[in-house]
Length: 317
Image (cartoon, rainbow, N blue to C red; front, side, top):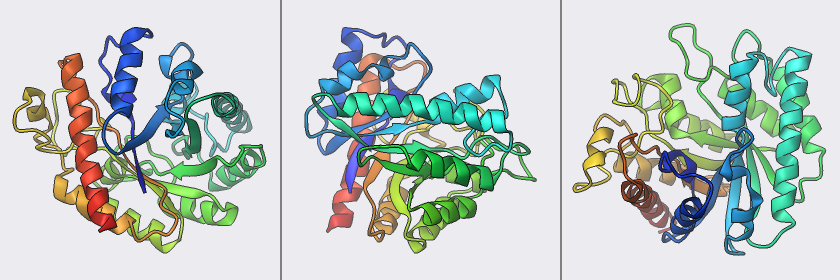
């Protein structure tokens, strides 16, 4: 049960692609108990898609690739694009995107330094374009590629709702668990997206219990959510809010005052996840406010990673 950090969400807005980017990555990977990054597979030109910084990471680092940034970018231009698309062209476009990610994973893993151990996939698009059968077909095809031991996992996003506008609106967890069980894949629960789906702080534990019971839980990612509007967006938006009260001294911590994710909730969920025999990692992905300085961004990551690492240590006993 290692700790990874989705550092891209908290990176300074002016991070660039040069020395400042590399320094930020090195600082995050140097944090106590952090073994690797949740790396975004993003549109072309992103510094996160340059294998060089991963080749330069320590040989013991273990990273996970998330497809959510590229998936959301694709949906922005073609709403029927996704691994779960009922539209053949939309499904094929998503598989082509995943094939490019596969090439990136292989390039990193064949080089020096750290390596990818897993890839987080998503059941886009949203209704009415989505199909559980299409997702199964897509993942069965992708699982047949030579991933070199890299684990494929479905990261659950908030599902479609008839009562409110979803943030993502992808497939139900039950569908994803059934497909993962059928194909021998893992499932990742994202605390914030589960809270957004249920419009409460109880749904994440329900989703964890279901994934543990199905024997599919591979990962748990912590991002916060809020029932109230914040400076960076509306209530129930997928904003990756930090843990509430993550600092008593850093001024930007006040902007997480409405986050439903607390230190006690982190500890309770890690304890519940620890019951999963196949649990590979616990991660944290929180965003920095638009007003944050570079130093504040790093301190936010450090403090939130420390909260998660403390919960992991407590669960280990």
